[in-house]
Amino acid sequence: MKETFVTLEKLKEIDKTYSTPYHLYYEKGIRENARNLRKAFSWNNGFKEFFAVKATPNPTILKILHEEGCGLDCSSYTELLLAERVGVTGGEIMFSSNATPEKDFLKASELGATINLDDYTHVSFLNRISGIPEKICCRFNPGGTFTISNEIMDNPGDAKYGMTKDQMIKAFRELMALGAKEFGIHAFLASNTISNEYYPELARVLFELAVEIAEKTGANITFINLSGGVGIPYKPEQPANDIFVIGEGVRKQFERIMVPAGMGNVSIYTELGRFMLGPYGCLVAKAIHEKHIYKEYIGLDASACDLMRPAMYGAYHHITVMGKENDPENYRYDITGSLCENNDKFAIDRWLPKIDIGDFIVIHDTGAHGYAMGYNYNGKLRSKELLLRENGEVKLIRRAETPEDYFATMIFD
Ligand SMILES: *Cc1c(COP(=O)(O)O)cnc(C)c1O
Figure: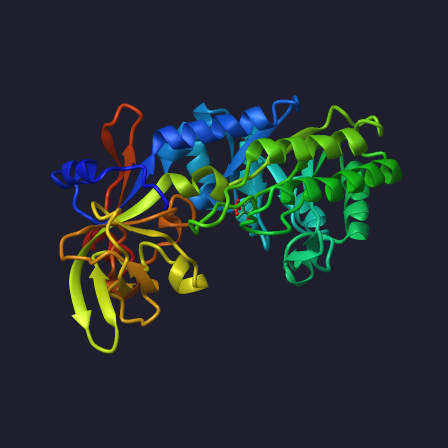
């Protein structure tokens, strides 16, 4: 069974002020998890997590993480503006983007963000736009498949990101000639990994590369950015990653590869999104219709516009029918939204307790890549976001969209 971080009593209380649907975030869980991450990497002096803004671009959430010592990883001009507006600038921003527009590089430079170059050609592109900063990062793509103990985790060879090793070396040499003094290496080779081995194996690849590049180019490498990809258990039977085991695994590789190479002062950076927020958010909706045709359907007041992952990736999100946690799961439902799209289903053929109209339905693990991927298809308006604070209060941290928001970009004449 997967527990919810909110009780039915609390949902009924919230209902008096805020109607469903909404994304609800859990401050206590967010803070504790961020502290555990820091503790797990405390062996590394310069460790820093740069939260991937794209996962949960909400100012209140970003401020909480900043209070817990996190910087921000931005991927676009607008995300850079958001970072600036929550008071995060300079070296507390990583800018990891690809096919980057000029305007974005310019803003990143203006804020003093640490820029992560996705391609070799971006060296001259950036140089022309803003010049090369003293501290810079390059993104690596080893090609082929990324495997851990013979299991294929992902296919970097098919991914559009990063540079080959030869390009990395060429880029480092040119960047040095253009005035760069401090270098970082970044790679993101597998997404949503449920494995304590992912980061250590990625670290091994990047540490070995760092030693080789430092030898060949003489570049002063000061950080290794392990990026995102540490996953969360969406399914109840999946084990959670243990961040302390992961931190220890990275440390072992660090001591084996970096320390003997005289690179023991190199900082470890991360850009986690899903791991930081995923489990600490849920989508709260109500059952508003039931329908019996060839299958049994429950219609919710939320739709794929509030949570796209099931429709887009066929992703599993656990569902709790609040107040019926101990009832037998002897009804098989498709749980749907109201879009004119048959893939607008939060669950297909899911065994659940009998659902009645008005039941609170909690869709788990929507804290990252949930609200963030929302859209306006069918004229659906994006929901509000609420924060369950440590003291039990509930705070509105983003209002729901109104029709005026929907019409704001339209031209009627
Ligand atoms: C998406 C992304 C992340 C965060 O990924 P998660 O899977 O949410 O951890 C980090 N870095 C970059 C460059 C990304 O594109």
